Length: 298
Image (cartoon, rainbow, N blue to C red; front, side):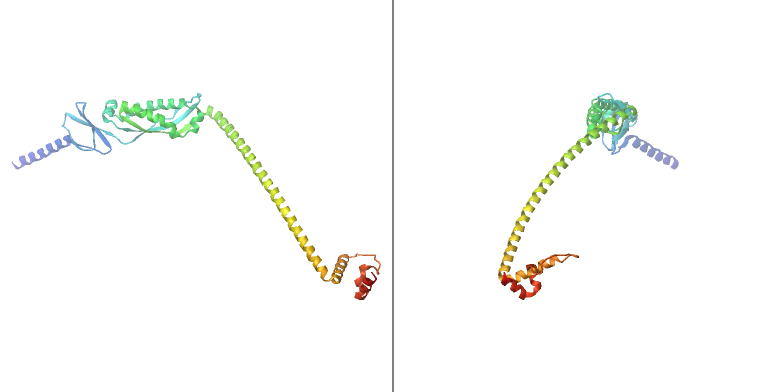
């Protein structure tokens, strides 16, 4: 009796556990789910949490709603002028409508990727086909991919229930047969710009140099005029002092001028003067008496 009762308890617990495991289910925060009854959707977009279902007749399909990355293979596209470029890119996408996503892909992520990839390729092909090579090189990549991102987002929301978060270009290369021509054109363009900048720099240099020369001439003229004014004022003041000094003691002034004349005449080596000793030049060599007599004779 005891063994039979234990068996019944264990069996009851197993039955409860089986019913609970097939009735209750959990949707994670990174997931969304749909409820199916014999393959037909009867509840859409089930949110995260603990939920219940009818065992056997109802099944649950869960989908990852995190941002997923599709890394595409490098593709060859033609520009507006029919020049080829090799573009390496990737796409970030996310499930936003679980019902539509399940109906389009049966919840198979690889199926979704096979549907998304050709549409991305077509959109990029159209985008690069409307731009020339110079625009592709010069434009920012974020701006370049804004149009395809918005276009694919509208298309894939309706078709697959997914949103295109972003399309990023990792690298844009040129085929070897195009690279040399493009580099030559880029080099020519840079050389042209360099010549223009050098010409502008030369013009600016000449203008600055001319302004500096003009200012130099003006400053020199002003300085010359100022120096002449100061020299004239100094000469006038010196003449006044000289005249005043001469008027105070004419005899001493004559003596001083004679000494200065002697010093200048005999300051060099080997100087020789042939002068009559009785001339007025040597009057102060004969003493003050002789000098006074000479003055009296004069």
